[in-house]
Amino acid sequence: MDTIASLFSFITTPVSWIIVQFHKIYGAMFGPDTGWAWGLSIVSLVVLIRICLIPLFVKQIKATRNMQALQPKMKAIQERYKSDKQRQSEEMMKLYKETGTNPLSSCLPILAQSPFFFALYHVLSKIASGDPVGVLNQTLVNSARQAEIFGAPIAAKFTDSPEKVEALHATLLDVRIVTAVMIIMMSASQFYTQRQLMQKNVDLTVKTPYMQQQKMLMYIFPVIFAVMGINFPVGVLVYWLTTNVWTMGQQMYVINQNPTPGSKAQDHYLQRLLKGVTASGEVKSRRKRTVVQAIVAKGADRNDNERRFMSGLAKAGLAAQADGTVAKSETAVLDAEGGAGQKRQQPKRQTKSKRQATTAQPGTAKSSEGDSASKTSLQKDESKPGGAKPAGSGRQPKSAQRKGQQRPKHPSSKK
Image (cartoon, rainbow, N blue to C red; front, side, top):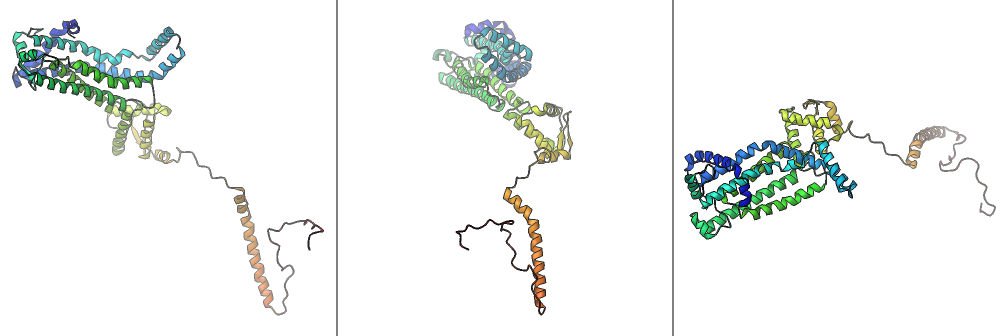
């Protein structure tokens, strides 16, 4: 580790100068030899570096999303040119060039802050040995050696010998407890950050090998940092824990405000947006109007989250416009209720017996009316003296009897 750190000694002077400037501010507040002054100086160094790396973080997000979207095409290229590795690489590079994707962009923040990390490690190693480094003169080095964070000197390590820890005016138990707690917190924050990314900000409708790789890294990275952490000084652990917490907070903000399309985070974001729009009847901020405008422009290519958002607007009597605003629309309500958006239901096909019964009903009603009328007239005729029954007043043939010529009976049948 010391050999690698020495390779980045060219930026030791800028890093040490930044720490000294912050130490002047915090030293006036908490005392120049306190752990608060030196510890907060390291934290402020991390914050300053991460602010400068925000543009690279934005590129990292875009690159990660582009890589997720390209995974199906990349898999198709690998299967198509399985036996020709050179052609496979050429097609991959062509795909990256056409889509403007750089696979290394997802690693830019880590690569960019690595020199500062190793430079800080080099500075703390010199402080532990009592040697001036960069702009840190002997007085400042002695002050930093006396600074302790919860009883552990900022230059002490978990693997230091008892003699070396005693030379820093501390106990081995305090150093190992503090470093162990910080290593656990550092690994846990790394795991939570990666887990949050995988569960909330990934399009779950696309199953690709990239997702499996990210899932493996979610478990591998914390273990790697835990193993490496036992060789880090307390000051470096403060640096790495601070940058992990910064990354976690920064990622939470991005997931909540600019989620990946098709992810759970997008569904939650659009539900919050829908609630706000339906309550006020308008899209207030410019950024939210841009989101609505992008959803409208997709048309039939919207994902399930975006379709639910548009349906929710329609149920509230609102229609999204091409410029990202919303307007009241009665047609949208009808479409949401199924008037125009759903298929028209066809009437159920009746069986043959039901159709025949329906057709026979009008004739049956007429015949019943005629029978009742004839019965009434017969009763009147019979009530008259000497009245006789009219012809044809006998029993009428049943409707079930077959009409037309009857089949002659067999001679052997009984009469």
